[in-house]
Length: 253
Image 1 (tube, rainbow, N blue to C red):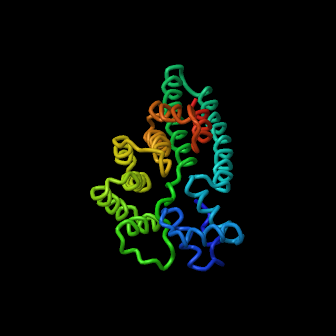
Image 2 (tube, rainbow, N blue to C red):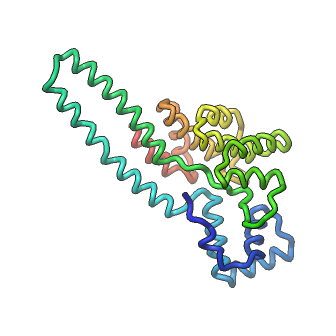
Image 3 (cartoon, rainbow, N blue to C red):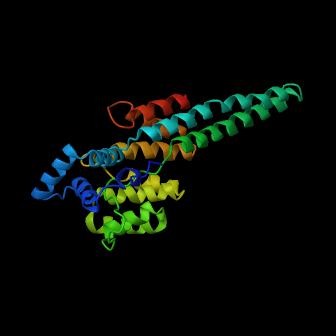
C-alpha cells in the first residue's frame, strides 16, 4: 500500500492539512489560495506533504512501484519449479497417461499464473476524491463513504457509495462502489458495474483506471483474452497505467 501521509504531515498544523485537502476538493477561497501558494513556496514540509497527496491522486507512488517490481521478479522465478514434476512423469507411465497428465498440468499451471499475476498487480485504488483528515466530522454522506472505504469496511462503503450515486449521479461514487466489490472478492459484480458506466478522465483518471481494473478482474476470473483486450487498449495511448499494462501483457503471452 501507499506510504501513510502521517509520516509526511505529522509536523504540520491542522490548518495546513485542511489547505491541502481543500486544494484537491477545489474549495479554496481567495484568501486560502494565497495562503496555500505562500506555504507551497516557502514551507518545505508543506510542499512535501502536497507532493505526496498529488502522487496518490495520480495513482503513482515510486515505493509502491519498486515493491511491485520486486514481487514480479520473485514471480518470474516460479515457473521453473513447475518443470520438475513433468520431467519425473516422463519416466513413469504410458503415452496416453502422459498426454492426459500434461494437459492437466498446462491447465492448472495457467490458472495459477493468472491468479499470481493478479495478486502481484492488484491494489485497491486510493481515496483521491475526499481524503479523510484525522478528527474530522464524517457525518457528511460523502465523507462517511470514504471513511468506511479507508477503514476497509467495504460492505458499508459499497452501500454508501451506491446511495450517493443514486442521489448525485457522480462518477466517483460508482467507480468506488466497483472498487468495494473488487476489494471484497466479488470480482464479477465489480466487473459488471464498471463495464456499464461511461467514465471520463476529466477531474480524475477514472476512464483509464476502469480499463485497468477490468483487465485485472478478468485476469482473476481466468478470462485471459478479455483481460488482454483492455490491456491492449491501455498500451495504445499515454496514461498512468501504460507501463503496467505493457508489462502485464508480456507476462500473458
